[in-house]
Length: 416
Image (cartoon, rainbow, N blue to C red; front, side, top):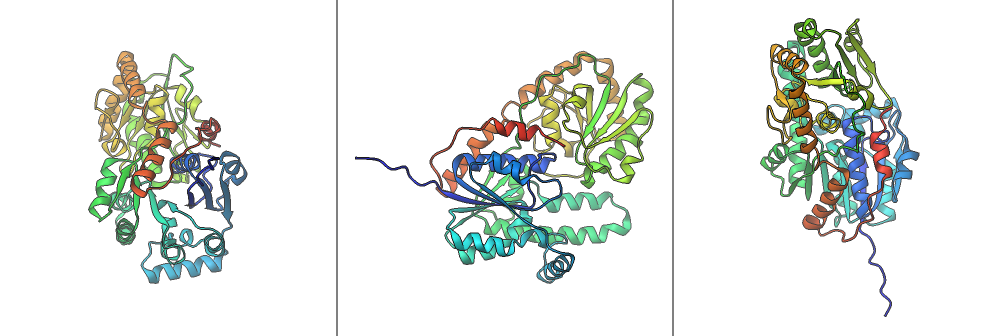
């Protein structure tokens, strides 16, 4: 008797943008999830067009299909925002939730076992999916608890901005609560975020950490820079860069002879570009962050807002760079203060920690070695196995997987 292969389960993944190149923390996670799904299922990825996104490169990475939807015109965007306001959606979200004709075509053409939403933005389309394919399981990958980020930003924002930001946070909180009660499965980056979604009424939540791609061993023995790496068009990162340059660096630079502060990240806003000085380098987008980490004796991360987990810390650990971070920057990660990183909150604490690492290179070596051990479980292969297992355990979907593709590492490492 000839055995026929069991058809692979079909998963539709909806994304707010093409995640290649993987030049932001969000893109890194989205690509990791897509690769994991692609290894286990028959995947169709539908993304909004985003400037710089390379849909052809994504298509080459996936065994499944990838396609994109072009941005709507100004009038359509205005209409979408107006409708979103009436429906109670957060500002700026509605345009990501409407995959109009293309989504309908896909749902009419084939049946999907699950629909995987990357970010709450894309999950606005869940009522349409449930009407057209009520059997499909709904899965949300919540990169963050978005409302928490806005609430934290509002606490330190200028007084005139706080009311609008808290209004936005309330609307995002309402959407997150609706999705928590609606989704069949929610993925979070950390147990802290998982508890937040459980408190909102989520039935099934599983923690899938952020993945860090393979990193080459450090190239430089004598390091002299303090580095900050992060997408600078994300407000918490831009604010952290300004705090680092204006409040922390002046307190310690005289005690770090020959050192530089290096700020690396795409799309630095004017207030970050203005930080450039003889001993402060604002780099902007780079092909790879590896050379900048190779030259750093420490990375300093004074974040005051955020959620999820910070890939910038995983990158530093994987590169053997000692980390000084605020509790918000390090939350959700399995760290021990003084073992694999140093905690600091106020500018003076950050400055003292950087001077300590400059003078005590053995401490830096100890932190680096511990960080390398801590980051070991955060590999793409490990994450792929977790995602497939949770889909199987919670949703009873899938029972086979293709081998991990080494091409994934190249895409994860690209950061133009």
